[in-house]
Image (cartoon, rainbow, N blue to C red; front, side, top):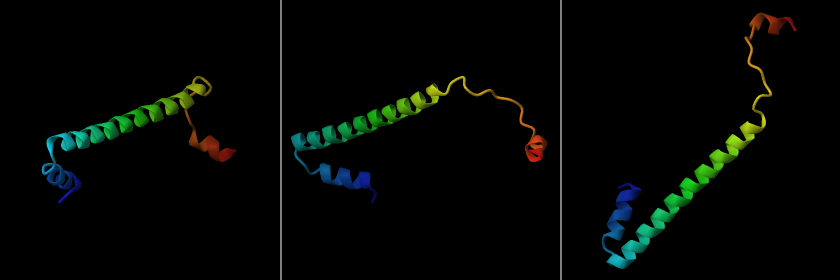
Length: 68
């Protein structure tokens, strides 16, 4: 039995108002996770934005690399 099934089996025996609290808690965790992911992504993009335009892409010649 996986975790979702175990949660379902436990919650279905609870009174309606207690089951609603469990649902609100789970939805809160999901929202918190989404917010943390959004914040992490924004921070990563901010780091990349600092270096925008500093590097020029050019063709890489492997033989010239070995000559150095």
